Length: 266
Image 1: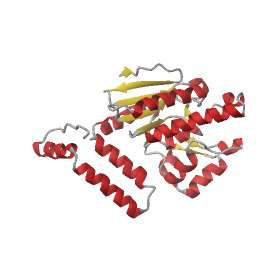
Image 2: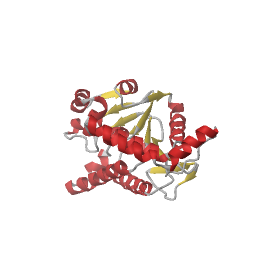
Image 3: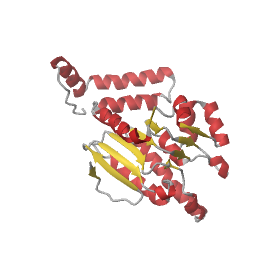
Image 4: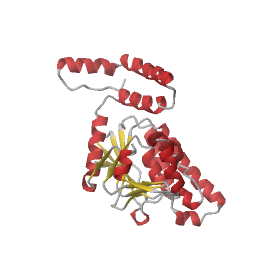
């Protein structure tokens, strides 16, 4: 692995084989709570990735074993005035906006607790893998507020409105098995195996034709917001574009010639 060019204080970023990035949250003393510095660094790194033509998959994880991320740093927030809180939250929302515009699959490897903004980072990911000890929750209501990093939008789209409202209105946590049953988590692994399994899946995705990966992701994300007929039409438009691509022709040739394909991304 090689380091990215930036040196951060709350996150670390490494590359594997140029096309996989591993972003690690690095505030274990605060259970990786999101403070203004971390938000700024996440905005900077994801902005860089928007124009990174080599990147094929991102894995987000955290150091230690207790937490993935427990949401906003309330100790920092308690020191801020109203304007400071608004500026801080604007950073959080900017991170979400940039992440949503990034056309690269993101895998969240969640060990320990993922609460509030930490749960929302996982919910905004394309694939969520969890350790056996993981827990998820959106406890903002207990502070007199509500999720502000996409939780009220991502959660009901994944688990349904009724189950989502139950979590949102009570602030209750669910464990890894419950999260898998309701569709938040794809797979559960022993803690020691979690990151390796996340990287194995990232490597499989990175080995696939990049145009097809992006098209499938768009079809699921954007098509899921449309009515069925419109979604089918959108899928067809993406499919036809792929049928005219060099990668489609290369895939057929490689299959006939019984060799690994060489994807060009065009």
